[in-house]
Image (cartoon, rainbow, N blue to C red; front, top):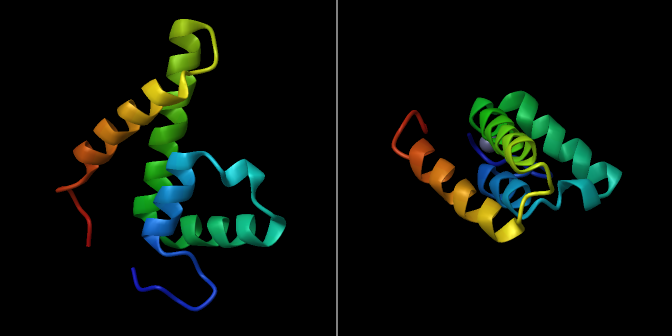
Length: 87
Ligand SMILES: [Zn+2]
């Protein structure tokens, strides 16, 4: 989707999710983040996948996921997503 003034681009959203910094963002940034997810199905699905990934890691290992391990898995998810239905 096109980048609008004051809105996050898909790339920015992906970066925020991958770095896991969404929880540390201010209210306005979170709002912009949520706005983007409401309008962009790609990013909404991406966030769901990353969250599901974190959840299953916690369930399987019974602990907080190792960030490095998590990042590698996320790269796999990203690689899998690329080449599908990106506009
Ligand atoms: Zn997007």
